[in-house]
Image 1 (tube, helix red, strand yellow):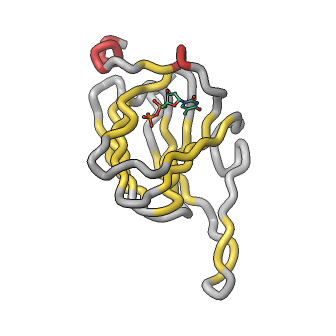
Image 2 (cartoon, protein in one colour):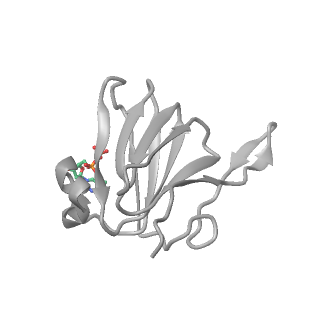
Length: 133
Ligand code: TYD
């Protein structure tokens, strides 16, 4: 299977400035997989690097609901991709086998939409192991 690349996903903002907006993530239309899990990450200090893992099966879309979040991704070929998430109407699709490093701005909130339930065995947590895959 060809190596899938990370990419932007743009959600429509339904509404207008007078009332605000709704964005929607539905399985297979706005996100390219069936959604099994949603989690959110918050109160992360700005000097902390989160992530530092890759997934074997789990696909994700990451969205900064509040604030600015920098997502650095590396694939199995060593190619790197940087996404600055700073608007709740856009996210990044993260394919399998992408090592991620995530930095939060003050007060940022990260929403993660995932294709799999939580399974620790799906994680690659050692960078050296990731580089061997
Ligand atoms: P982890 O995915 O390693 O977070 P990050 O990459 O942002 O640092 O998860 C941190 C901890 O939370 C880890 O002990 C596993 C636990 N966790 C769950 O129990 N369920 C989940 O759905 C997630 C995402 C994490």
